[in-house]
Image 1 (tube, helix red, strand yellow):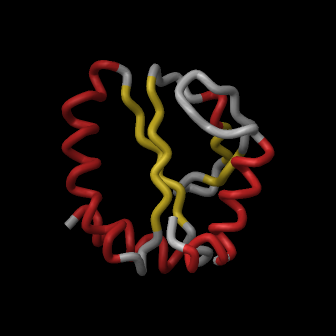
Image 2 (cartoon, helix red, strand yellow; image 1 turned 45 degrees about the vertical axis):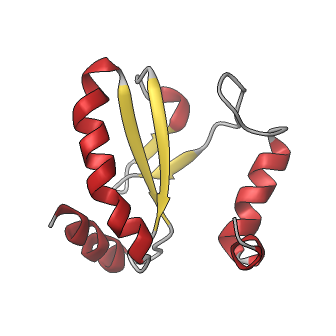
Length: 107
């Protein structure tokens, strides 16, 4: 992560999360979390029933994030039957902005 990204609000949140969990890696434990889904229902990470879960942090205003989404869709299509689940975590605070970004991903 670039120095500028590390100093951002979300960069600091990611760093705090990593420090709280003693590092991240395959097989490591994590701090469970709850976030609202697209319908504003609660989604608890530990309740996902996937064998493998990829957390994708993105924003509607982030060009590289949106450019990566066709690759994520392809990976999901290739590996979902083998247990892959992708959970997108958006940094958009406004539901209008989030839904606009989500519609751009689908197009």
